[in-house]
Length: 64
Image 1 (cartoon, rainbow, N blue to C red):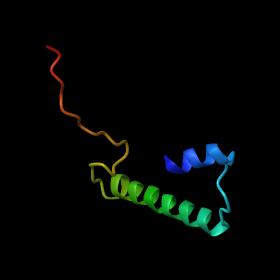
Image 2 (tube, helix red, strand yellow):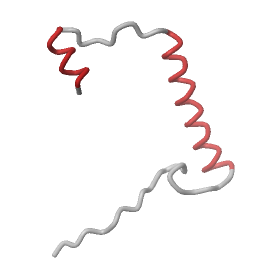
Image 3 (cartoon, rainbow, N blue to C red):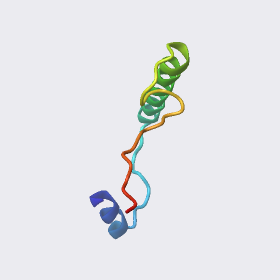
């Protein structure tokens, strides 16, 4: 939020100096997370938050 306000005040709406290894590390982390979810759900047959598709049970709300 502070970054957004500072960017609007300085009229700099883009990210400054993103290094290629930052993008590569982010892509690698997201790819590893995706592969882990595939392994857990289809390879090992486990459920829960890491399974595909992710169903999160929410408590029922009283409709009065």
